[in-house]
Length: 609
Image (cartoon, rainbow, N blue to C red):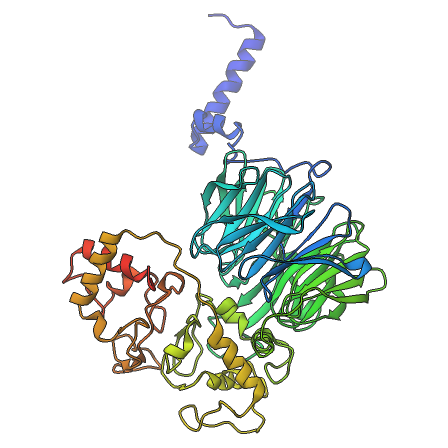
């Protein structure tokens, strides 16, 4: 066969390529794949157009379209206030449900939306009539927290108790859809078709794609991040700013300044990737602060305003340098912060003072501090709440680093096991119904709530609330009655209102679980309504380098187990079922049918009834 010169060259080239592929052990098919485009993992969505899509974030305040009128949720008064801060005018204070946490306004300013955490409801306020026109009941224990809307028809509410996002139809005032999300959803941000959800204790962030009402992704911002209840979006650059606290529970030699670190993490919204190089460590960018809780962003001037709820101040961060331009002290427990439309004024809502502070962002001077509630909460209980949440008073904390609320926000457990305690690892308990469960601590070494003085001095490095310099032994002469402020703190702790159980109950399964509970002798130690006989026992869990076999631990209450994982003093049981699987006095898997253990877990997770 005769080949043209061109064909001969082509055959020679092909032969050389085959020899080369053989030498490199690469098959032609594999070579072809290298030139094919790599499929992009799905789902992938383009970010909304910032020119036509505003971003909305949840918070304790909402600003009307006039740029002046503000609606605030008042947790200390069970009210919502309509106020015009620039005029120093309170228009109305309106009763809503118990423990309101978040406020939003519909796009036409006709209605205000207020989440009532302890009541499990959403109040809809008619702004013209200044009254509650409708109340949506999500159910017992659902703990509605954040609320957000960008129109007048649909709102989104985070249900911290049931781990869901509720889509609320504002036209017929009904819950239209529930979207399951990971644990403890709190803050919300809405941008176009994207809904971002913060998770209070894990520090995770969830993205929901609204056209399909599906969870696209949940990303971690660090295994040690927590107290994550707000975020701010930079829609020009596609970034999110996340105020959080890093809880250093793995620290084996804890000191007041190595347990909790205030940070603002930065997330690239294009791929939900944390940007470590852009993180703002507030303790070095500004000064030691406690519990960065909410923030406001001036994306044009590259300035970030961070409300630090525990240290009662606002950090003003220049994002060009990553350093603070100023630190502004404000009233007690700032939980809400918001810029006006042209970014000339900053409003700071101090939740445990019932005030809105107005800051001029040009001069960085406070222009006004406006009371927005007619206080009905008992004053001693309010003082106790302020002490619990404060890291400012040197009697409570050294250098603004720690507050009681850092680990026990809302009386809850942070879900951590702190490794560095002198007597071994300790799982953070919930703080509800304390008067019924004396003594305190896993070791049972406190016989009164006022012994919290010891924790203030030892862990928070405060000088203490006692009027005398010395303290009594924990099981000795009582501390109660020796200090007004310590007594008010103890009274506040005793008054913490527990949430209701968020689950529905199958009567037959609940009854079967109770039968297993009784048959296995659980009621011998977990007695009565409180679920404890207040006695210490060795249950086979205290075997560490610090603790030895035979160590006894206080019998914990069995109430609110649904919100207090992990279990045992050292958190060795990640789930309630593991309590009955691990070696020790609670192990049941070799003696009890799996279905009966399931019924027992079902029963325990629904206490108290």
